[in-house]
Image 1 (cartoon, rainbow, N blue to C red):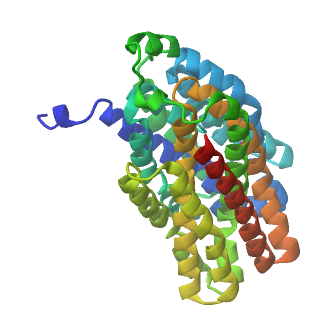
Image 2: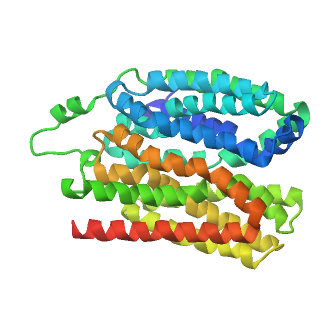
Image 3: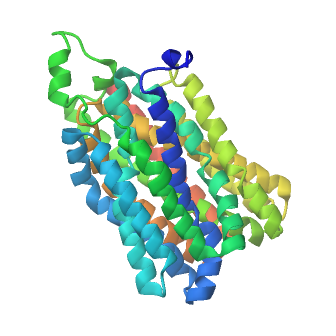
Length: 404
């Protein structure tokens, strides 16, 4: 195998982690968009309960994130990720056996525990611990393919559900966690270089690029909360609106089959945006690319408001919105690293996860109620307003960085 020596260190493992993220997010966060109607019909659940499961997943993750982050800084990520894969598989299997609202929602608690240990920020922390000064570039490249989760698992979930039903679909997704995801997690190196060891390895007066802190100690608290506001507000939209993307397009006057096809463009659009970000990431500070995404997001929402029933407007909305969210999702992983450094990165991400996940948790239910009670246009206008609020917080953060 002569080509293998030319691969970067841990290159195959990074590719494997990309696969685990596609499967992890596709089988949990995105699958309900396709399976919810059949589940609701068979179990007699309304839309608030159906998408309330994802809310429970995120709240569970928020509760566990700080403790998990501290553990990852001390012990590395391998054991936690393996446990998470097994717990996710159990939760997905329980979901396939759900008989009513209690068992349905309880299954999402189990999945939330698995998410906290294996997905969420754990993949980013793994890359930071393995790749050192190359962390930002590797994270950007790694997230290129993870944007395909919806494009892979929306059609796959629809195909499996049509062939064998929604219960068998969840069981197949559970099997993926054991057969595909768990062996990849088990390949993560057992040990990593803890912060204290990294500090000793750096010569006096020198500093690893990934460990530099751009935020002075006196400004860390304010910068932390501005970052939390930016990504919590933008995440409220990016974690809420895409779950209802197919229904939004269908309610605007587009046929169901066309709506599914147009919505599936979100994956390639996210992928392209992350590719552009990865290509120019070395030339522009991450906060500037995030600012561009935060500006494009609100504008895209108005495209669908102003062009109801138009497939051209729908395609433009999906491409622009997904591209904006793709850039912001990369910044969510890389901006804290750029501002606060690699030392204690997992602990920092764990702290940021709490306000972010609480916002993310509210998003599915909030948008479900908003669309059902007030309609498509109000939901889109509210999405634009929330993103403008995030944009203002990012502008405040950049002004503070300029003064420090």
